[in-house]
Image 1 (cartoon, rainbow, N blue to C red):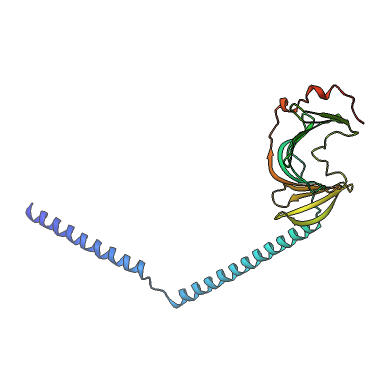
Image 2 (image 1 turned 135 degrees about the vertical axis):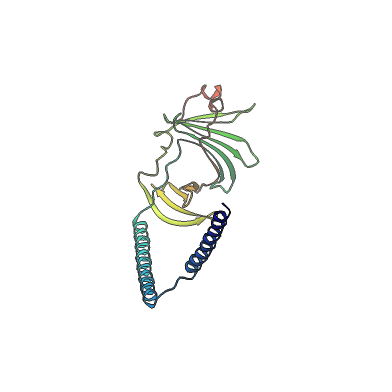
Length: 242
């Protein structure tokens, strides 16, 4: 068994040696493959072909992007902006410059589902006036307190619809007002309406009589409690003015 065992060990060592040599040769061949001139020429031709293809794709992509941009610019230039309809319910704080040169603040509570529009005016260094307008054309103007007074008026129309500017308003272009770039519309020589180009929120509106209102805050969905809109009893103890 001794010689056979020795021969087995020798064969095993020889096989291991050959395996190491073969593995080393393969690694060397993998790292440094021998390239013929024909292979190099073929690879160079393939690389040039790929470069041409990439250039063609880049050119096609640039043409597509340029064409798309031109189409967008042409389309936008031919479109006349339309005013964004009011939310069904919102609260806005307005800073108002009156035609009499006096100032006042207004808490505006618009509520189309309930058919009412409420302005709570704080006169400069003066009283608080409530203006509660209903969709049936009735408006209550009153003050509260010991010397509270009330005036009831009837109008032919109710409160403005959320889309009141979409019918008959004329687009006047863009203008910067109060630091905002705005689209401007005019309707019936009665109101000039300024809307932020980017956010589409109202920024300002002016009336024919010189009253200008700047929108300080605009809260979509805010609702005034019903108890605040209830006119006092002394509003109903008088005749309505036409």
